[in-house]
Image (cartoon, rainbow, N blue to C red; front, side):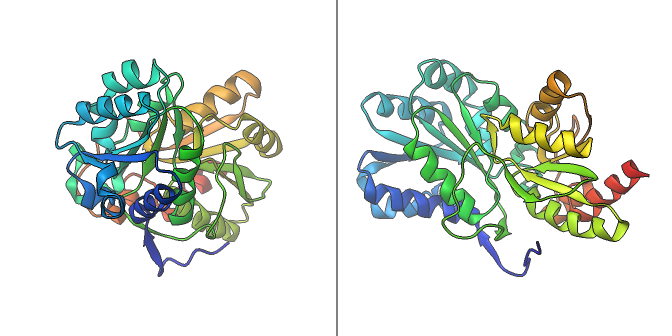
Length: 313
């Protein structure tokens, strides 16, 4: 599978467009933002349905509590802001108001991971998935491109309960076709026999390129894309790990508490297998371009290939 990197689309725009489209189909959809509607692209919904859009301002705790209140009246609220604010500044409200009460609130964190770029460490959420995945009743989705982000928004709207969707800042090449369905079932991108690479989000494109390059080294890698960190597709991971005997996880996030941790916990309990986690290891981010930071943290295709070749020596 070859990714055309010359053609990219904004996944944030996919989020905004999905909101506007499902808003036409369901009048109970309401959208809330924290003074960032141009960046999160919730402005696309606001333009279509100004009476169902609420800019709460720079008051993220109020954003979540207001969404919870709207949910209690039968509305389906999508609350959006940057991922670092959506999960960090609001953790108490999400835990005790949304999740404890199992309210039907959809939280969308845009600008996740090191690819936020020049805004630097304060704006690069590297703990958001871990925070959300550890909350009872919360489902967590990390889509990989435009089409899958659109599908994730639609899926969350159609399924009851709290959701966290993490959306990248960067425009990304298309991996999936329009209309792709998303579900807790992992997607097998490529079969292989020598090792299993497991990833999600925008690092999927890097892993696809890495798998192609690994062929030059005589390494036949299997690639699993797992957009749902929670609920987690145990079966697909166990099946692949049993076949290859080596697993490498790649995520634009801390290696603690998210995708890599979920894989390690599963395999240590049910199928002891060597796992190598590639991600951010107990560090804050830094300022730089998205491509520079992917390279610095070992998350670009070239770095992934180098790491795997070293492992397989």
